[in-house]
Length: 597
Ligand SMILES: *[C@@H]1O[C@H](CO)[C@@H](O)[C@H](O)[C@H]1NC(C)=O
Ligand SMILES: *[C@@H]1O[C@H](CO)[C@@H](O)[C@H](O)[C@H]1NC(C)=O
Ligand SMILES: *[C@@H]1O[C@H](CO)[C@@H](O)[C@H](O)[C@H]1NC(C)=O
Ligand SMILES: *[C@@H]1O[C@H](CO)[C@@H](O)[C@H](O)[C@H]1NC(C)=O
Ligand SMILES: *[C@@H]1O[C@H](CO)[C@@H](O)[C@H](O)[C@H]1NC(C)=O
Ligand SMILES: *[C@@H]1O[C@H](CO)[C@@H](O)[C@H](O)[C@H]1NC(C)=O
Ligand SMILES: *[C@@H]1O[C@H](CO)[C@@H](O)[C@H](O)[C@H]1NC(C)=O
Image (cartoon, rainbow, N blue to C red; front, side, top):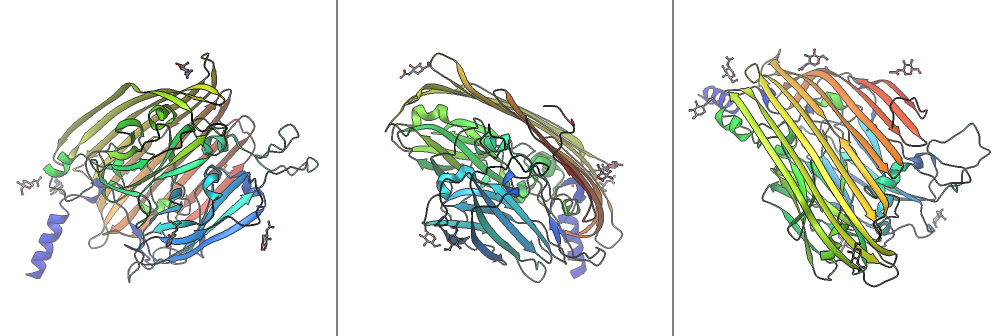
């Protein structure tokens, strides 16, 4: 009788091959995986110029082991900048180091200073022999917060440790404060990458991207004077947990009357049934086929921000794959694009100053269109003030000629079929601000195109997903006679393709998943005459044998190409990884004419 019930249970909970539904896995510590000594994991990214310099001050601020921290409040430690670290700092870098050993899922983590988010990161899945990694992020754009004393640095990392999941995440966080460097001209031959060290440039250190990253959209401006967190109370981390489309979150804010510019930066990550939102079939497919999964609601998501109920901007987020996602063997030792330093998104809200400047409270809202449980979202509102006046004057014309179209196509018979979604959005706003430097009109143009195709074949055991996102953003400043004084744009393309075939496994209750994943992030920045091009792509091929959520064995290969180019500098790095090892790793700062600007 017991056996009978067990079989029934299996039958009803698993009426469909697992390939149809995306999932997350852990690497089981089965002896079939080779043993290595503790290994370093990394995310391939542009090296920071400060990597090559000695900081003038260092603050080791956090050292904590995250064991069974599920449902616990975050870890909090007091922050004050180092007392004898004289100002000004040219750069501030946050360094996050972690190590872990055992079996464990990937976990999401956030770091906040005074409620302002500084880093969203996910952990690498450990091995029996241990792994470690380091994330360095330039946090200069949070200067005004890092300058303050008696704040709390808060870190959330919910982990489960029990007999099965043994991995404890040991984390250390430090801040490094740098001064402007003067590069020694006589030091020929040893040229440090990215240091524009001639006399004309005053020995300033810098990459074009830094300026953009600090202030995506209109760059080249100093960090904001004030940052207001658009975030939760902090008892469970400062992020808002968004469980559904209707569960928007709001924050009342009041901004100084001399605010002359506003940029909202949001952080986002997706989890639970929406961890792989871009692979989720529509509800009709799941219902008709009696599939027991919450991973549905179609494959379209959009994070949007409102000001007093009006749409201020939105973004289809880049689909970051965490280290347990799709096939965990793909992401060792090189993790997926963005996994250690999730991208953030900037929206220019200066055109809204006309409504925000009345000294009254206003409501900033954040939501996820089509979202299901759950999303972790919050934002930082960067404000620049007019230091020569107590109030400025502004007027807004927002949401001019908004466009939103979405088409969904769905054809299926039993477990086979295809689903298409095509969406497009255009969002414009314009406003002038008259402050002590003059009367400037800001125009913010935002648009994106989204395409997603999901196809199931072979009775649902073969699945192909192709997604394309193209997002453009432009900010333009004009003076009172209509001359454009600054114009910046960012164009991003992030295609993704995932194909999975499911076959019966060689052992009891196991199955094989053969999966290919390709994704990339292409970015083109333009700032007046100067341009930057960044291309980052990963291609993974492999298989794994799985029981429940445990990977018992498998083979995987990932190759990644990263290229950066600006007016003066180039960087490229290619890596090949296979079965947990780095097979080749070539990097150069030479401009190889690999791709044009
Ligand atoms: C298709 O898959 C379902 C669920 O796994 C199974 O019940 C059915 O027998 C399969 N049909 C064929 C023709 O293989
Ligand atoms: C700051 O003070 C500490 C302890 O007094 C000292 O160890 C450190 O070297 C000083 N740093 C600087 C930049 O002077
Ligand atoms: C910092 O956190 C402690 C306890 O975790 C709390 O008592 C204190 O009020 C916090 N300080 C600030 C400035 O938020
Ligand atoms: C789904 O369940 C319903 C009701 O239990 C049943 O009538 C239908 O045949 C099932 N469909 C499939 C594809 O198993
Ligand atoms: C600022 O400039 C805009 C556009 O040129 C103009 O419409 C507005 O009247 C000006 N505001 C003031 C206070 O001069
Ligand atoms: C993965 O790609 C290889 C060729 O690169 C191809 O032979 C294989 O069929 C693909 N697998 C899947 C599941 O699409
Ligand atoms: C990497 O560099 C090595 C030696 O410099 C070279 O032999 C190899 O072909 C390069 N590999 C790639 C993929 O460029």
